[in-house]
Structures are given as C-alpha cells and as structure tokens.
Image 1: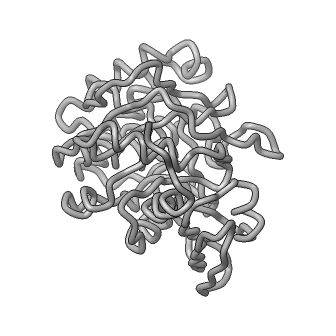
Image 2: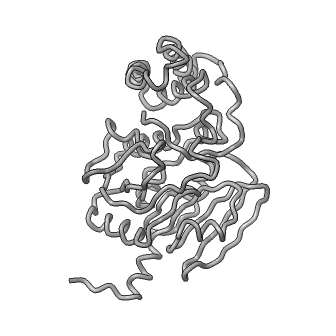
Length: 298
C-alpha cells in the first residue's frame, strides 16, 4: 500500500493546473465557487486588461483579464501560459469534487500512454451529452459528444502536436459553437491518444437564469448554417453525408418548424462557405456573449 504524505500531495497538486475560461467574473469568488484546490489560470474576459494573483488553500491562482471576447481565444490564452505537466480545461460554472486532482493524476498514472483523458462532469440534465460508463479509447467515430470541460491533457503532448482552439467557433466568434469538437478532431488527426474514464470529478452548476444557452436561439437558419460550416471542417468531402445523417437522427427534436429539406439546404450553404465557394454570411450576428456550452453531439 502506497502512503501519500502531505509533502507528496502538495507536489502532485503543483503538477496540475486548471485552465478556466470565464467572462465578467470576480476571480476570488469564482475560485471559491469552483472549489479549486490546485494551481489555476483564470482567463477572465471583461472590460479591463490586467494581471493579478492570489493564493487559495496554499495554491497559486493566476488571473489574466482581457478586454476581448471569444471562447477559443480565452482558452488559448490559458493554454499558452500553462507551465504544469497536466492541464484541466474548465468553465466558470463547473464545481469540482474535493478529490479532482487525485483523480486526474491517478488517471494518467494508470494510462501512461494517454495524451488526453476525458472525465465525467455531471451536467444539467437538459444539456447532458455524454457519460463514460467504462474506460474506452476515444476515436474519430465517438469523440463528438465530449465538451472541453471534460478534458485533462499532457501539456507537452499538446505543444508537440501544435494544437490550439479555433477562433472561428463558439461564443464571441463568427460561428455559434463547435470549438471543442474541432479541438478534439485536431488532436486525433495529430495522432494523440485519447481515453474516456468512468470517473466523476465534478458537476456543472445550474445557471441562475435557467439552463438555456447564452448563444442558442433555437433551431433556425443560423444554427444549421453554422453547423454546416463546422461539418466542412470536421468531415471535409463527406460533410454533406454526415449533415444528412445528423438531421435524420435529430429530426423529431430539431425539425419541427424547419423541415429536414430546408435544414439540409442551410447546412449545405454552410458547407459551401466552409469550403470557400460562397461569401454568404451566417444569418444573424453571433453576438458578443461568450458561451462554453456543448449541444447535441456531432
């Protein structure tokens, strides 16, 4: 039996940094609400540009505040400044279990071949898209439902693969969402090994204004158009086939006001824009509110 001393526990905690993407948050209050017990980097998009730091439970919390918007940009700001062995991507509405750091580090100890591990984070029921029932390899055919906040990574693996989050997708960007799926897609394309583990490390806090997304405005033209652009980047020449499969699978939920045929037409417009064959714009303006929600899988 291995005995973990207080000194070794402190050493382990410094191997992991939580990278938090936030908007208009008070960093000290946020760290408390999230139950952060390791080092962390909070990238807070607000109306100022400044750096500050503080300690919580003996761990350094670094805060970078930027007068800008875009969830991909926010995550990249944290990743670029990460100097730990492992990082855990997070959002402002995630609350961690007391043993989250131990779970992450033990996960990589048991899977030394893994570059990325996907953990269970319990989401609000209406927004739940995944649950790891057993340990499994994540591949191109089953990666689409994982949100960024499920992801713990070997930082050196990401650096060697030169992967970052797209600035085109997500809240504050031109297209509605999909930066998480595209990031995992790029990691798989670069040959990184990804595993899903049936280990819970926290939960998503229910929003005060309900479960509704800050960017999702219904299954309208913009939703399908933006999904079409994303599908071009994910599937290339096979984008139209996957788009039709997506619509047929979710037609009872998504195609009550817009027919499958119309939705497919909007998705094909998006696919053409993604391929550079049209200069069409994606419906209504995407707005400035950052969103880190993950909707129905790709």
